[in-house]
Amino acid sequence: MKIEMTGIKKAFGSNHVLKGVNFTINSGLNEKMGELKEVSNLSDKIETTSNYSNADSDKKQAYKETADKIHETVAPSGDDLTTDDVNNLITDEATKRAALNGDAREKASLPKSFG
Image 1 (cartoon, rainbow, N blue to C red):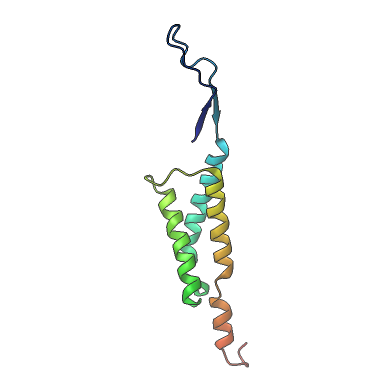
Image 2: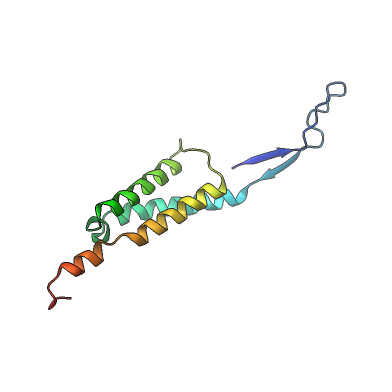
């Protein structure tokens, strides 16, 4: 959860240090982190599919790097991210998952009578 404090004014004479402080709690980030945890679980399953295992090595590597970053982020000691950072990770995983071409490569390698 991210809490932003704005409008802080220092005043030592009357001890008004927190007078006029506005607190904003970014609850959208909590929702996105929940979604990112679901994506993390999905990425574990994706890496066991033929679409992943038969994909071009550069596409597998790109997906693996994104999946690893997601796993690191959702770990209890993960980085503090903004909502935009989390959205970008979710989008990046979906894009790289869509780019995996193992099923297409496997189908293309079959004799025409099986395709």
